[in-house]
Amino acid sequence: MKIVVLVKEVPDTYGDRKLSLETGLADRAASETVLDEIGERALEVALSHADKTPGTEVVVLSMTPASASATVRKGLAMGAGSAVQVVDDALLGADMGLTAEVLAAALQRVGFDLVIAGNQSTDGSGGVVPVMVAELLDVPSATFLNSVEIGETSVSGVRASDGATAQVSAELPAVISITEALPDARFPNFKGIMAAKKKPFETVSLEDLGIDAHDPNASRSIVISLSEKPARAAGVKIVDEGDAGEKLAEFLIQNRLV
Image (cartoon, rainbow, N blue to C red; front, side, top):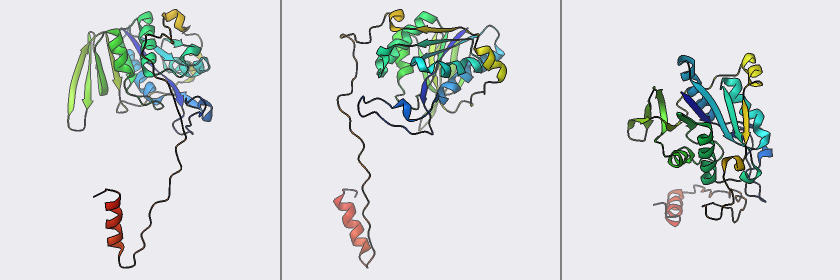
């Protein structure tokens, strides 16, 4: 079985996050960049299955700037057998539609039985790319899974909602996404870090995938304006002089809160 895990380099969750007011894009230099934790958990699902299922091949796939190669290699150090990185200057600021199109084309190039992704990245938090990829590949999807069971011909898991849980399954090939309910990822050890240097690492471009990022017939979203979030204004302070209840009621009515 060939499992491809989608991973992404993102700004450190605990660092500063800023938008460039010139480009409308995330300012990647504002903080350290790391492999997204939810992507690491997705990789752990694949590696855990490979540990107990001989013959399982695990590939990490990422659409990132060239500078992110070291981050992608962490997936190899964790235990993946090979990596594919899509690098192209035309992908700067790619929307979710273009991202899904690129990832789907890369998956067709690599080949797969199962694709595992996180439910949503910690930078964009769109939460729709996995299902968009599945749609473009014309394969079933099972998203937002809190547990995963991988079989020889199918994959299943439990999806939770506010009011219930659902047991879902899909025949392979398929695309799934997992939540933070899945276990934490393993840490790369010294042996894995050294081995990662010799593992296959392929870099492909949009030309290799046959995709035109500026195709006039394709639907693309663009930033047309951008402004900084205004500073938070001071709240209303009510001093009790025997009429605090009346003042509070008046405030609630004026702000249509009652």
